Length: 596
Image 1: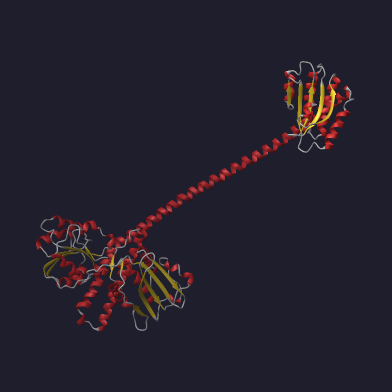
Image 2 (image 1 turned 30 degrees about the horizontal axis):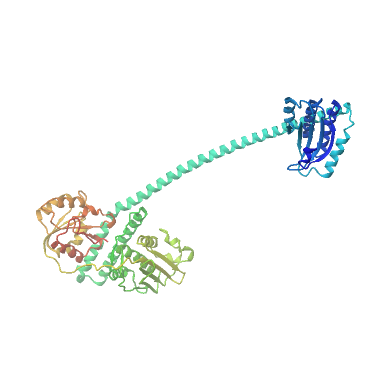
């Protein structure tokens, strides 16, 4: 009884184990008690078999007693204790067989075996324990025949259960095999779909790569095309503009009012065409990342005056009035880009403002990010619908509608102006309402005070004995000849670069005007020849070109005294460039660049 008392157990019954009949009773009692306490059928048979093996092995031991009880702590178990007073105890084979079925503990000094069958928590209720006690008492008078029948019944039940388990296992195996087949089929299908998708992705990626390559090549070809034809386009346009200006300047007395008006129209149209060519080239360069600002102090008073002159051709009787405010605000920027921005905005406003006013105001402002200059172009024109105010900044897009008739344009003005504004570090915004006009604001960083520049110095015309001009464009040479006649007593014209050095060596001129684009030997090579000749290197060389400033190879132009733009060439600019011949230019310096 100590085995149970030490663990808070509740004893059920006890009896002696002396005969084979008692072993049969032990077997049946163990199974019945386990059944009453809710133990599963297979565990009942395992417990009964273990008790039968150990009981039969212990028969013959003196004082062999069996006690059934229920232990509640720490986990509920049905405990069967076998104790004896004298004898060898259970054999190793019997212990191994029993231990494979249920937990068995053997205490040698006390000559005690404890066989334990775990119970489900909550199963050992008072009613269950009482039923187990009654079941144990019911088997005390069982006969050998009864026990044999019971064993047979247990065996049949075990076989039936085993057969049912095998049948269930077979069914589960079939289901598992069917599932596996489905999984394999699904995996195969998914693999094929994935492989097909991958092939499609690879093909699409290759197609996208090819399209990207074609787009890059097309863009590069477009840029090359515009760059290659720029000189051919600029050359005749420069001649038209220059000749028209000469007609107005030198033949004014012989021209009547209508002729002057017609020549002014020719000059304005040529200037417009030249500006359009410049814009197209700048758009291409900006797309390729090759358009870089040339930073310098900007004389806003002069720049705004230039704008008034450019836009004078847009004015006509009954049209909108153009008002360009005066301003002495200082700004460091790219003057060419700034003038082009404002010219595009003003010309666009004039185009779509039949009557009323178009106004340009300039103001400075200070802020946390530094000083800024704000240019505001406002008009009283037809306005822009809200749903199209973003699309107008797309290249070549034009607002559709009756108001567009009779107003030519490429759709580049606003996109070009915004792109240049961004290159200058600024921001362009637009507000508009149909019928209420449009306001465009350009906000640019002031970048500090602008130093006083020399401008176009009119200090008198230097007297020169000779002057050599090297240019293959007969029209341009004819256009500037009246200007050169005022500067030199004799002008020698050379149409090929290969003849330039010999002409300069023969004439020993006071200065050389040199074009960069020549059919045989370009201006860069001619300049290098003059710089390498000890007898000619002291002759001042002024570059006349229509090449954009950002496309010039300035490292190869260090020997030049100045670089002048053909389309903006004036007598004061020539005077300013030539007058510097009295001052020796330091090596690698002295390029008075008037192209910016």
